[in-house]
Amino acid sequence: MSFGVDEKSLMRRIKTVNNIRKITKAMKMVATSKMKADLTRLLNGKNFGINAVDNIFTSDMYMKDRAPATPSDA
Image 1 (cartoon, rainbow, N blue to C red):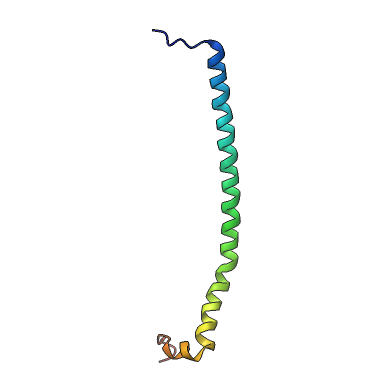
Image 2: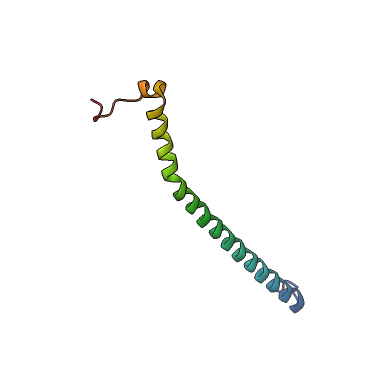
């Protein structure tokens, strides 16, 4: 049983698959790089966010009155 595939079209298909493989690899590398940058930004901003919320509760009298009681306040 023959599918009528000649050598030229087979070689073209192999080349196409290899090119798609290269593009996919490059896209994975870009995604990895972006993920690393995002994780670095998140880690650098983590303490800022925590300190900002604490500052809001300690500096604003309205929020200070409504803040949940902590064991150190009791």
